[in-house]
Length: 474
Image 1 (cartoon, rainbow, N blue to C red):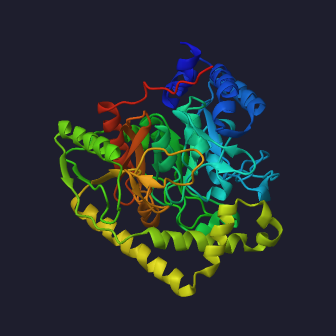
Image 2 (image 1 turned 120 degrees about the vertical axis):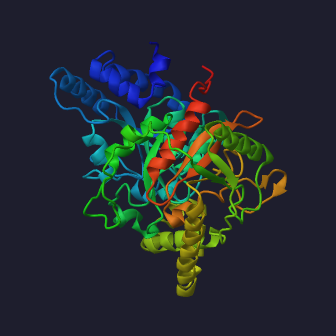
Image 3 (image 1 turned 135 degrees about the horizontal axis):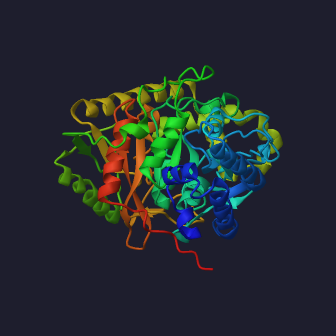
């Protein structure tokens, strides 16, 4: 097997290969490190690397195999961590000058579980300051680029994670999602990203990110659906410090993945009842993808779902949360913050108690309407985003399908499911006319990531994408 093929192997295949020692963890890790050293200067996906630690842990992983020790689910597999997640002894900046020299003394729960499962940590991936926006750039490390077109954004806030996975710089990445931050970059970069049901993967970062309340979910970004199930198995389950964390299911996502659901009722919506614009090329690709399910004799029907617009509710919760958390830092750090983040803090400071209460009630209305859809259907499908990736120097597209749009018009499909907490994934389903990936969002009923994964796996089989790889000019 050549080095390029090793870099684009699935994590599941890597794990099996390491167990048999056909390829060692060290060989795989060294091969991916070599590729990171070549490609990362081009795309800027990793902001901090831990290659020496990775090599040492890969050697230990191989020794454990030779000794016949019990192996974890992710044993020996190179993995990246988004720079919002605390890593013991490893710089964690959160993309902010405030934390530029922050060296945590313990791992986040997610990182601990990934390590306990045997993963080899390659480093931290780039994120916008405190993950506040849907593109990836910050004042410490600069912008992360889209591997399919270096003049386009990779999305955010898990942009470094998605760009790395798409480029073969590690098969597994840990991301987080407060308004689409796993699904947005997965769509723009042509990879698979899963936002599990809220609480499925616990968190312990209230001190730093708790101001966003119950919006933010943790989840995997991968190239293969099977790898997402594998990673999910390693991370789910109650942690006593997170009051919202859910019990570990009495099944393995990986083991149940191959059980194809019968007689599914698939619903789809191209606007969720409120989205005002959709790129015509995206619309065609999404509809073509949806009707591929007809080969399975599943029922496909356009949904009548009409959500009350969630945008303002999310905006109020988001901006007031950031303002509350960063208010003590404004005087000292204001001139060292991203100017757009400073503007968000000003906006957040102006909302009233009445505004916040209205946002909470609106959130419940969104949740109820989504749940009504699932009374009649098993799955809801939408575009992940209203357009393909836009220019790297933009925070949002000014026009979609030739129409002038407001700043939030490009992501109407992701935000509702952060408000509601439902599981949702973005899966590659086609390409734009200028060769950029397009993602389809697959949403499941409350607590049912398994159904999302199973439908995703079926789509992956009938419409694979992994044979396509970014072409970096040497």
